[in-house]
Length: 325
Image (cartoon, rainbow, N blue to C red; front, top):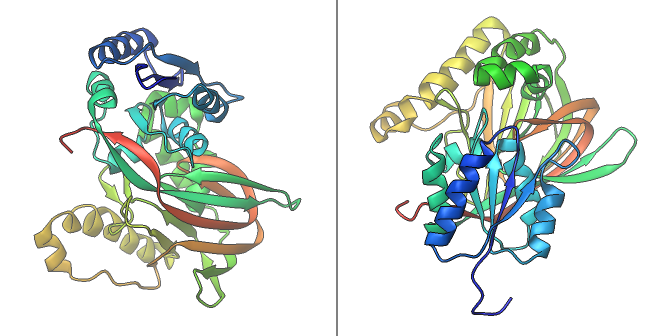
């Protein structure tokens, strides 16, 4: 491609999540208006949720990758573009839209998102990477853009009915949450955060967050930011029913409502850890479990792990955002 050649975008789309005719029309119009060349189109599938088709697009020298789908499509695209420097634009679709929410992008406004893809500016954000060790000692590497988790959240995702999720959206998780909370098993792990001492812990849930906002106004990690070079480690072990109530009040009310304003932050003061819920920050976490446990990345289950090595790569993902942001 010569210096005088028009820029080329590639759309990586999940056919179940998008209205393809409407999307093609919008992309064609905005690309032409911005002076870009003909867009390349790649469809994801059950066998390839986005990584391989994204690599095919990169091999063709595209200048922009547009991820049109849910959180799984965004994560797969991010995994493939890691290290390439090629920017990614988000066309939010699906249940969570977690990265889009944390970037404060407009949801359910496909024409606006397409326009921003061709006229926006680039923003570098951090990318989480995790090596997962399986029970047979094999290892596989993946990325996460929002969070990685074990314990109740991973079990919740495993227990979520996919058909119900497609029809009812976020409400489909309610039944899964109830089933997961009935699970008496806890995580028993030995871990090391950065260069600290190795420690042991027993928790219901462990989450590594690159950012912390969830649907329903839930701010799971109030201090997490996508570009601060740190992940937030949350460990949860509520003591009985009252413990769960305290955790819910902290997450849904104190974090989700009060801490969203400067006055609210001043009112509640510094965040304090307790036996129910604790937070730490770092750049690397190495952990080994007492038995294989479910692990999730950005809301998708990734099977069971006996150990993992997770780290943050600052500014490793370039995201196209609206120019006015």
